[in-house]
Length: 134
Image 1 (cartoon, rainbow, N blue to C red):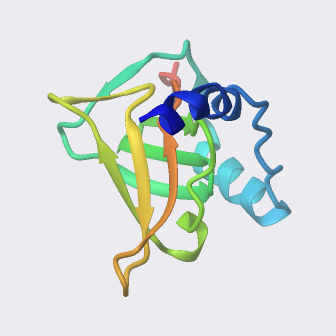
Image 2: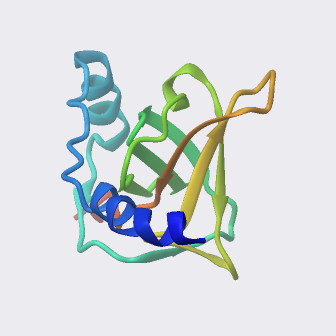
């Protein structure tokens, strides 16, 4: 028990380190630009509804898009990096209720072995909407 107490400051220090996400590759940037083309960013929100089911698009190990419909897409930059997303690992979001929220714990798992490959948390959600036509 004392070992755990002695390690607590080290664990907390590791959690407060400055995480810097990898910059997007040119292909990831092009995919993001294509997915958000013609849409305008709105004010970020902390939670989005799970229903109706949203379609998930992985841009990188730390950027996700949730497509609600053709006019609305949410972009979330993960807190931390969920390694393996870009190679096709499964994302598992642990949230409660009918919403996914900033800080919801997320892991990734290898499709074949089921072994955990990464851990992160959801970030804020930035809505991108197609503006109304005049």
